[in-house]
Length: 49
Image (cartoon, rainbow, N blue to C red; front, side, top):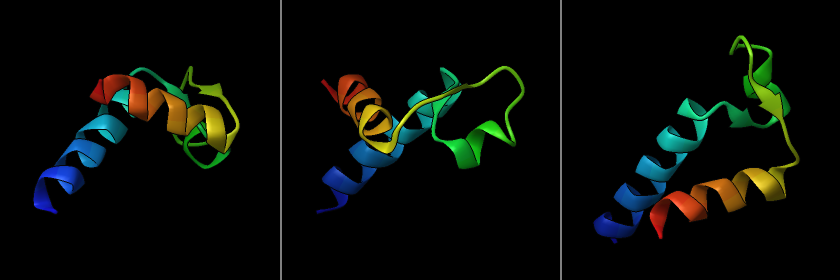
């Protein structure tokens, strides 16, 4: 279970670093692109693959 948690956590960090995030992050990250939650989830999954 820890391995899955770590993968998701790393995926989130990479997605946030790429600045493709949901609204709540865009108000905190200058130059970020706002996307729907489903797109953000896809970004996370793409970094895990």
